[in-house]
Length: 584
Ligand code: SER
Image (cartoon, rainbow, N blue to C red):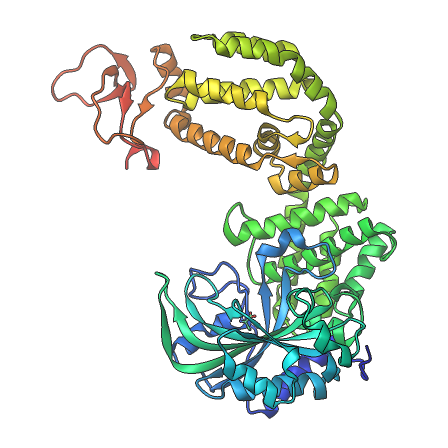
């Protein structure tokens, strides 16, 4: 593969934007990663996201032609980051037409840009089109692309970004990196496993979307008032092609960031597959976190804050595998800001905030990570032992639950005495699970039997049970994704369904007992009065007959009350769900 000129990533970004300025586009800054006015989109995932209202005709663009380099984040790829190709954060170069030029210009300029501005070999450029889009195919043929280099797919379609918005058929330009010569392409293209989208030798570079439709929330598609163009080309991938390196992590976009990680860990890039994976994850996730925080996202347990928390924690874990002393992320973030700040000035403006947020989150998670990691490693090491113990108790267990009216106590004792897991952890967890089930389930006996049956069926040797994942998460704050990744390294699977099931039950229990939680002295008073709980019936009934099981006057128990007294009554069951402390 020969490309005549070396261009830095900055030069590539500038060349793209300048090319389209010459074609009468105006440049427009990247929007924030937090989408404005779009509740259906968690994070900006494409260049067109900030222009949705221009496409739909709801508002008027400053000019009908715009070009941008947009920060994008795709959270679906978090767990894939670690190989040569995946990124969560990337810059998308795009040219947009709002009711102005259409397919012909978009295709012509796209091809010309790749060949003349970036020096890519024309021979290696292939196209895909939507199966029904004969017009796009004809345009590529007219531009000199041989028919056997144009591939049709039913799913060449892009959008909407989020749950509703503009969309349309698309045509992509792919770059062939393999060894075949152009004369061989025609016969190779007859093979179904050769070509764009099906073989790894093809890199998708440039997506040209012919935005003609609006996808509504109810699934309907209607024609937009005008035909538009929305294109996108990932800067990182384009740079790897132009700089003729194996992956975007070998481009100048990552050089200084990776050097910093080498310095901190004392481990060289390209030394081993596993350390490279860790270096990639740290480099990528710290870069993404820097941009997310720079746009005002802070770590939280839900929504985009959770995505940020996840990537920070994932990077920390891999930092630990390289024995980098925490907190270290700020030091890498400084490199990211040095490299990218001249184009994304918000990184420089918000530098102190970015560094502080990273430090606080890292410090907060540090001891959890250590503790959870040590415990999980022991659980993994003890797998065979756990299975052995379990096999021993299984027979007795089956005897107990096959009885019509089995006693919970027998079950508790059985697990208590068997002391399964490090420091009897598994025995304790199962006892807790039985207890939780008793607390939540309506048909206690049947539910319990089912739970115990499920436990007996578990393959403890090859799986990390949902109980363990839930314990690590609920008690230590150790995330399920991290447990899963560590387990995978030892060829173990985690039982996510069981984990989700247990978490649901924990939430239910927290809800049903919350009415007694807020005030300990009241709770003690109820205990003294012999009242254990008010059963919540509102999941099934909005009306219930109920007994008054206690009366309080001036917060003291009383046997009776007179007309006009202000009292509190306690019921044995109720369909009222207490919100806002009970007032609602
Ligand atoms: N919106 C399209 C994409 O994200 C083209 O920019 O691929």
